[in-house]
Length: 96
Image (cartoon, rainbow, N blue to C red; front, side, top):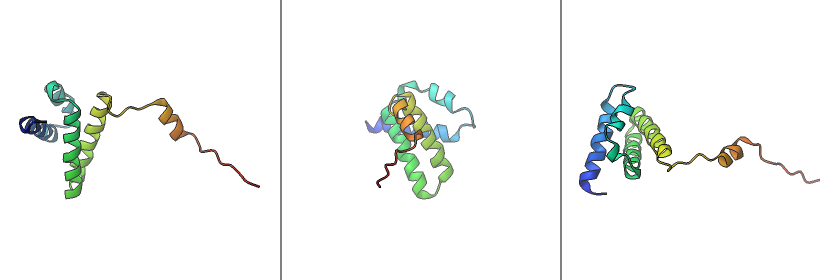
């Protein structure tokens, strides 16, 4: 990732943080060329920094955006097997 592209990612993150609630999809749709795995990584890096600085609201918001984008890009797959395993109770063996 070039410094120029990283700057574009940070500008887009700034736009997301400043846009009115509910307009995030419009901001993202206006910049499809920037929506990729590296952008998701940049979002999560900024979210982590915010979390460490005590800016919990912005951190939660960015973690949510990052997770949703990762799902859309196929980077955060939700498989039925994983969901069924987490919903089922573990088998307990009893020894007599």
